[in-house]
Image 1: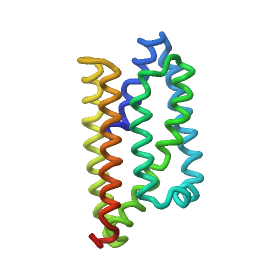
Image 2: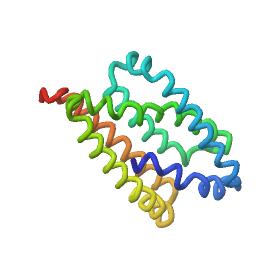
Image 3: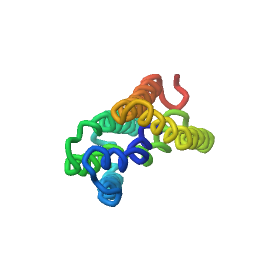
Image 4: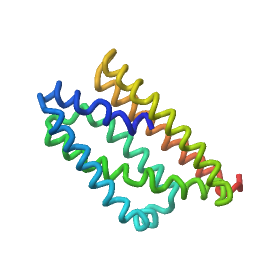
Amino acid sequence: HIGYYAPTVLLAQFAKESWGESEERSALVFVLQGCTSMLMVCVLGHVIRCIGGSIRTASVSHLATGLCNVLIPYCGSMNAMLAWGALSGILSGPLLGTTPVCLSDLFGAENVAFYYGFSRLAVGLGAFGGPLMVGWLAESTSFTVAFVVAGGFSVGGALLLWLAGACGHRGER
């Protein structure tokens, strides 16, 4: 989740330094992101069927979210950043909704409670360490490095999830 938190931590400062935008205007990016994410969740069942399952959908969502984060430094204006927010919401929308279903597919419904708790532990560690890491990277190197590294973590997560799904389902490994 380091990739998930990077925009939240860095976006307002990035927009202020890059284009002289206020924090209030930068907040519109997150409003758009939240609205489009909610719309995606409303059609998530259809999206999962079209993509071919929850694991594949979550993998695509992680991959697309990571690549989207890498693009942040290349947004040339606040309007491009607003478009990024809308796209990012659509692409990241499936992340939370697919987690319990993926865990059930991977480990069986009887084990979801245990593995969901473990996944929340990992998210908690990412929520604590992620903002610290991307903030440090942005200050010690550049925004570009911070966004690329954070995006790389999301891409890595997508690859791990895809690999886990490819290895088998419901204990059939």
